[in-house]
Length: 367
Image (cartoon, rainbow, N blue to C red):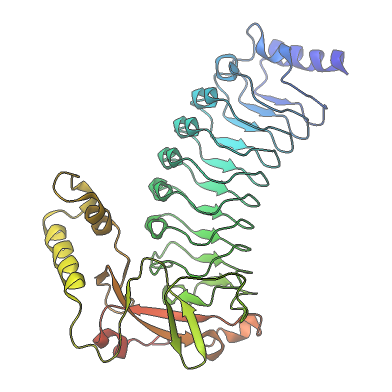
């Protein structure tokens, strides 16, 4: 087997192959022949699936400078060295089915990366540096131990497909609603009890799957008329104690995102002073700067600046920015034309989040 491996690599060097297949070789470490001398500088795609590798060599980028795709699916890789960031031309990296517990911050140096697959590992968190991957289009994090996602992920403005099925997510950052290119979001099999108010506001987002989040009872009304998967949601028996604000309408109760400070009542005649001040401040800055993110941390306190850059949500009726208070209105899925598509496999409601009693009274999901 060793001689056959050496011959395969020798031929690849001699003939300047762009693709090298080393799958199913029972390799415990990178072959020395791959990392010595020259000759593989033309290699663009390296396939090493179904082996027993535990780590990657530090000089990988030095020996394989033109690597565009690296497939390491189904190994025993525990950590990825910082040197991975030197693969500046890498566009596709598959580390699925390994034993990763930590993803090194240097992953953010892979500025050409378009596809990153980390399915079936032991990751508990992602480094914020992942937000530096401006070209990233596909991110698959299914079957890990994630309890949250980094807010910086919203900086991956090319991201189109985000999959985080079968993790331990209790919430997702509202900042992810700013992913302008996101077309498909899958969060099935987590511990979600609520979703960001603006989820689905982007016209680009067309597919959202939240199946088997049994505490999730409310979907933002922006998701109506989009392709949604919500089977197994809305169980009447909670699996854990939830401290989120809840809104009840008749026999229906939904949890609201943790950022919501107050639930408005139909009898309210005036908004709270704090909410009025934030809306006025936001409008004033937007009239001067179309992009509020251009504000410096010197001009405003950091906490206030962050809130102005990413409001709690926008009114589902008039698109007014909201910061502390919302006026929710429930529309049970079973009472909408979409009920037939789900055939009773879910007990969720669509929730319209409005900015005032006027919008609350005039909002109609079916109009």
